[in-house]
Length: 63
Image (cartoon, rainbow, N blue to C red):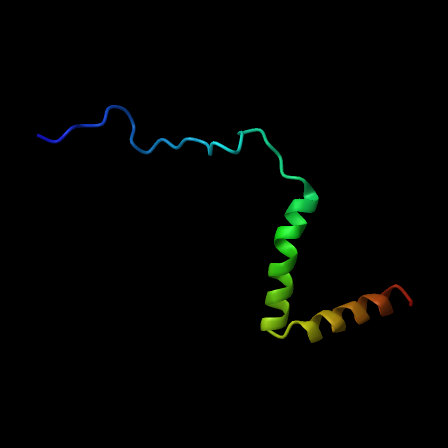
């Protein structure tokens, strides 16, 4: 006969290495996101668009 689980089987436990109140430092978050952003920028040809937008903002503020 198969054994049955008692209680709610969908309950999640937090990771052992991460406490529920732990915050990630902004520099760590930036180090994770920045390589991904650069890769997407190069892959999809967004570099020209980024330069165009930066030029437009610079013109807008008068530089």
